[in-house]
Length: 254
Ligand SMILES: [Fe+2]
Image (cartoon, rainbow, N blue to C red; front, side):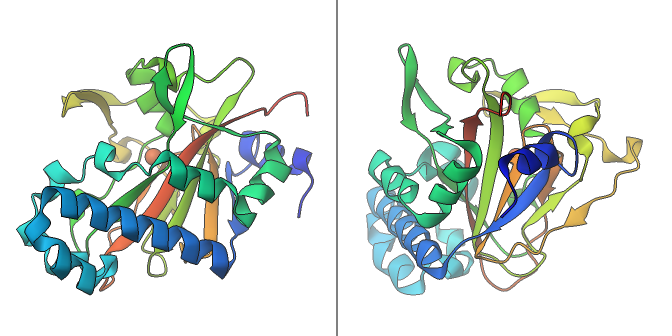
């Protein structure tokens, strides 16, 4: 393991991201929590379909996804894990590793009066060969800048660092990232989609070196809020599932 200063240097001054390995035990715990959450949501909204999706498992979701109003149903709100699930994940070994690197970690979440309420960890679902299921290149910071929600404002002296964990993913079919991009400024347009102002980024204006990460389960990607990243097209045979959250951490005075 590197020392804390070296991790901060990578995030702030170098590539802008690094990878930590997670154990199979941690991976299986997160896979089970997400699978249960997925079935629970389907059961609630499509009770007649519960068994078919339960038997087929989440990685085969695409085989029956025509029975579900995919883009309307799987909005972020539906994919946010419960507070109880978040507490379980915070007890896992990889989270302890994150705490060793960053110190105390606060996770962004719903705004509750003066303080952050429920810390949010949410999963994503991307079907094979579905271009519209994936996110194009962007920096998370753009979303925070465009939507002035109070829960998006980091507490004083804290910075936002994102964690992305592939739970079911084929090699090179997960996250794409532009190293060092957090050090540069990029122009983007905006539009309102589903009530949220979103950035539109014309990548052809820039000569970007995009890296496709291995994205194999048991790797977690930790990246700076301003790093350009996006999702690769899922050209595998299974539905891709990932888990993510934003940490507020102290990146200075360390
Ligand atoms: Fe993002």
